Image (tube, rainbow over all chains, first blue to last red; front, side):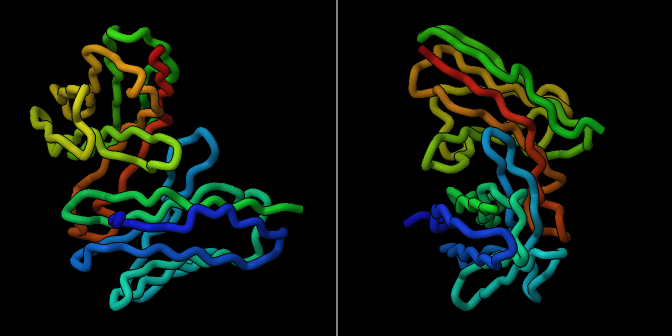
Amino acid sequence: RKEVEQDPGPFNVPEGATVAFNCTYSNSASQSFFWYRQDCRKEPKLLMSVYSSGNEDGRFTAQLNRASQYISLLIRDSKLSDSATYLCVVNSFQKLVFGTGTRLLVSP
Amino acid sequence: NAGVTQTPKFRVLKTGQSMTLLCAQDMNHEYMYWYRQDPGMGLRLIHYSVGEGTTAKGEVPDGYNVSRLKKQNFLLGLESAAPSQTSVYFCASSYSSASVGRGADTQYFGPGTRLTVL
């Protein structure tokens, strides 16, 4: 079993739609969690950290469920520019472990 | 601030050739990392460094060596390149490796090096 698992997608949604991604992790002792965004042929960039209380940044909302060991990312009012791969990242034994990513395609 | 930079951006090698990838960061980060990214595999940690003069093996270290002679630089070497090392290589840096404070272990990535070994 992979330490961090994500649905690879792709998720195809129209502009303006709301889309949600989930990610599960195996190390129950993990303390920090992130969502990174990676555009085609570019480096991963931090989208947002995920805090226990949940957090929101504009159209993006991240949630953490420690009991079930999953993290979610909700994107509201999708834009064409949101098309990218979203990487779920977990700090496991003081190393960041990256999921393989969920691809999002937003169409006009 | 340039953040994290990598040179070269692209390289084609023949099997058996050697090369060094250079990573530099200007954020005064203690921790630096080398990853490779292959289709369907996600990012895999090759080697990392917790400070100047120290290095450690990651998940896939075979065939690679690293050095961290200066805090701001982290070099990745391929002594005898193999086709299996065709990949995109990313360098990253962070302030810490532990979640000692919000954002302390956030990693910042360089633009990557696309390496093809024929």
